[in-house]
Image (cartoon, rainbow, N blue to C red; front, side):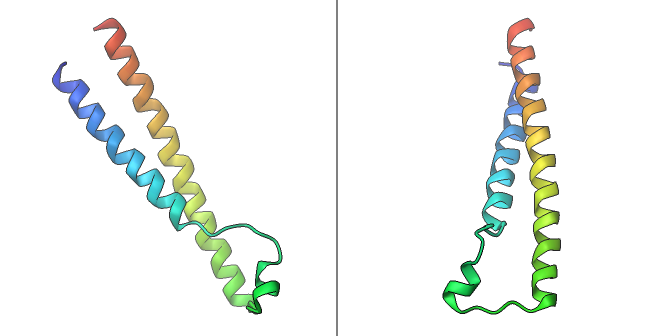
Length: 81
């Protein structure tokens, strides 16, 4: 294995951990759960949650895209070099 494969493997490991962390930080999208448990959301807390969820959603998509690109790059390197 070449040095490039080790570097890309390390990058792949870092992005896989990042994807896991970002997904765990996201809030569940279960309808009506706050009503059942008695938690009343204010207008500001709901909008704050949406902005945080949107931020985490964008980072999840970015990390997933880079993850797929690194996997493809590793397969191309393993196949042709």
